[in-house]
Length: 162
Image (cartoon, rainbow, N blue to C red):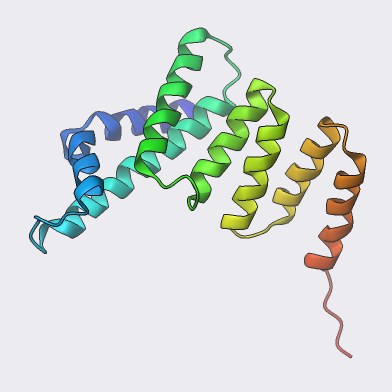
C-alpha cells in the first residue's frame, strides 16, 4: 500500500503538468499577469503538488527503513513542501514536521508542531493522545495528565438529555 502511494506521488511530482517552476511562479507573483482562465488551472496544479508532497512525506516518515537515501529523500521532500505552503497556517506541514522531529528524536520540536497541528486543524482524541505520548516521552507527566483530563471534557462519549 505504501509503495503504491509513494509511486503515485512520484508520478505526479515528475509529470510536466505539475511543474515546480510554474507553481512557484504562480505563488510568487500571485498570478497578476495571468488570465482569469489560467488561474484555476494553476491553483489546481499547486494543490496537486502540495498534496503529493504531503502524502510522500507521510509515507517516507512512516517507513521503517533507516537508509540514508530515504533520510535525504525525506529532507528534500519536506524542503519542497515548505517552499509551497505557509508554515504558520498550514496544518499539513505542522503534521509532517511533528512526525519528522519525532523520528529524529527532537521531542520538544515534535510537541510544538503537534500542538500547532491541533490548533490549525480540528482537535481530535488522537491528537490529544499524541500530545500525551510526547509529553510522557519528554518526562512531563503533569502536561500529559492535563491532556488526558481534557479528553473526556472535550469529547464526551454519551450525551444525556436533562
